[in-house]
Length: 286
Image (cartoon, rainbow, N blue to C red; front, side):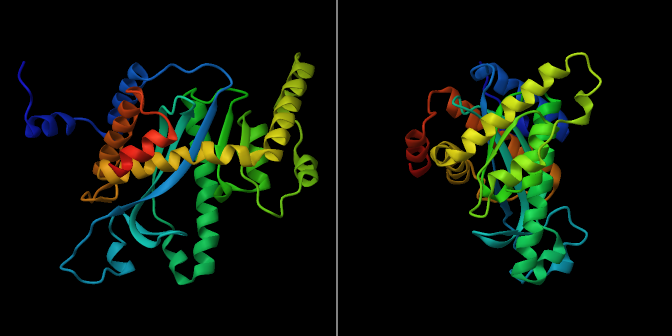
């Protein structure tokens, strides 16, 4: 059996656009990973994707990026960077990657001050929150009644409401100190779409179940912290072992393809039985 050369593989992969490539990789992941059951938990988190730019070793200004696909981004932990942001969704406990989105960095006007950066980052997270749930539901990955876990960066009463009323999932977003359960229960109501249907009482019962489940999980959200942190270990693995730390890619198309391959590698690692927090940490440090 002949082993293909790198240039042959590159030529083959270049025939696919981003959407075709994502579909191809998703199909491979579905074939090698454990099939999902009902009432599963989905973990969602995001990380920065920095591009390794070296334009004659000069300082890159914001205006230099206006005609580029990549933008200046901001991360609370990292600060400013040039590149994109990856949002990844994995299934728990199988840890199978099931969806991901690539976004440009924070809006350019966020560079004016740290306060604006934080405000724009919250706005961007709210947008990503909606988009990732739309992706999970449109592809029938997230089913009615599933629990989707987000960290505090996605916190907001409107996001709890959106998760239950629009997407029919349990949106376990880690709450902040000023969170009040009474305020949340006061704004959540039945979606208007269920009224006028013959199964109104059944729908009411289902949404009551979602709200009860969310209340219980928010009261015990700390036990989900080590579970959600597993996705951070997967990011560390991708950056330390799969070259995701700084990419030598300068178009959105090439970035998406490269990240797609990284997600595939993560899925292969998980399918081989390396699917615990300790295993992922050891592999990332190896």
